[in-house]
Length: 452
Ligand code: AMP
Ligand code: GLY
Image 1 (spheres, rainbow, N blue to C red):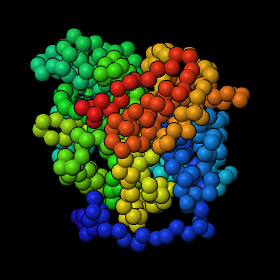
Image 2 (image 1 turned 135 degrees about the vertical axis):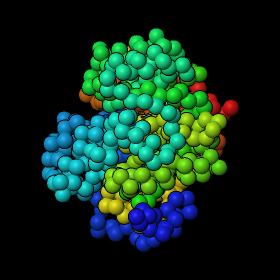
Image 3 (image 1 turned 90 degrees about the horizontal axis):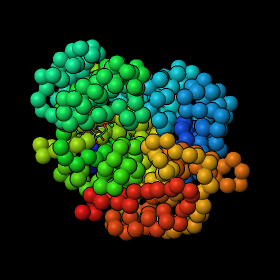
């Protein structure tokens, strides 16, 4: 079989071929699908691109309105509505933020209609949409990950857990569960409870009809985002998010309470290891399995004593990772995403990355990740954004009248660039402290590991 590398060094020291200057005559109209902080960061970066004429966002939010034309009544799950919008506005490229529409086949549908979309096909999206599929893919291609078993029969799973003796065990719902489908069970009782909740009570619906039980890995986490068209890897800076709601990474998991980039634990020689043992084998595996992946692959890693191990694949940009990655990317994002969707990523120049550090702090609604109230007026947004090197990305916000109000658990992600972690963090918190709404809270220790 011919190597997908086609004789090119496509990682790190990529040899740039055919780098073409942008033609102003072909300025693009781009539609971004989604309405969170990730999509605000995407729209913001795309709006800055010299090759973009106009950015649309469906549904968008109150902050995205500043950089894009929002279409609040077309939701990310409304594939037909999105298709109609893309046709009506002669959209040149649709960029999909969240995983659910990818797993549901949005990109396949757009492609069938002759429309260009950035994101993997339904089949390739199974790397995120089914943990059992992802584990089998890794096993097949020798990609280092926790050892595991998968079950779709509750009795067989119970039997396995009764014999299990290496607790804690990690129990995962196979399908999409909005980041809540992973339980770290300290002992047998908790493991069996988690199993019942997923398989019998069906807490995550059909996502829990199959489960994965895997080895618990110790170490420090990091995320790698790579944009790929299946042949070339366009490696974005490393990042790390903080999933737990409480300081010191305690309490229940959330969608992410903050992030920073780069992640020192995955830099230098460790990055080379990740590239050789994970990124390249993933690309080779996709090629061998004839799975066409054109999009952003976000690899969640545990850096263990024995080396990097894959915790999970996501088939889209992370949130809040994107809010610290894109402010550091000086390259023309629109050109990169379009070239990826067209399968000619080898034609774009290597990433141009700002050497400064980015720290992003999520400001959330009181009660999150449990129940919370919405509709709280947010003050101080402009004062925060005035600070040098600061961007305030909106996640759950809307603007029903003149005021911007809260409309979600994660409300904002306040990102600051700085020379070093301490400077970036201090700037981010200075901005956070200028923002007020009833019940607002933020973790005060984002980037603590990088600072240690
Ligand atoms: P996932 O959605 O699979 O990334 O899991 C969510 C979180 O659960 C990860 O970010 C880790 O903090 C934790 N986790 C998942 N799998 C493992 C594992 N095998 N060992 C230790 N922690 C894990
Ligand atoms: N921040 C984790 C995720 O986007 O899944």
